[in-house]
Length: 79
Image (cartoon, rainbow, N blue to C red; front, side):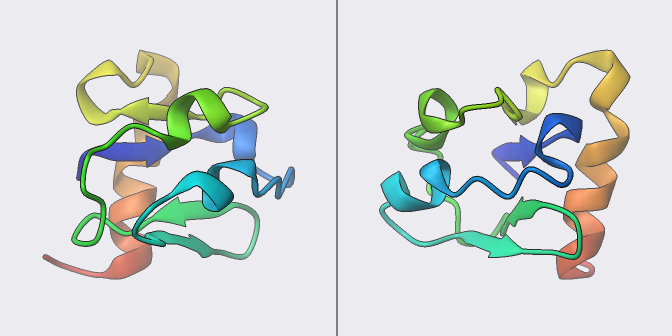
């Protein structure tokens, strides 16, 4: 998984990041968006487009939001 959607996205549902994604790897979950790890091409276009700063490269996810790495992965099942 190259990028992860973290806590600031919960209940915000902005789609600015979705609009700039060249491969449409974002999907809407119950309370936020999620990035499909097998579809993401690691381009990073979504990061600056996110108005709530909720998208992070996997290895740059702030410690307080690392549980969202698992949550994003679980949204799509085992890989």
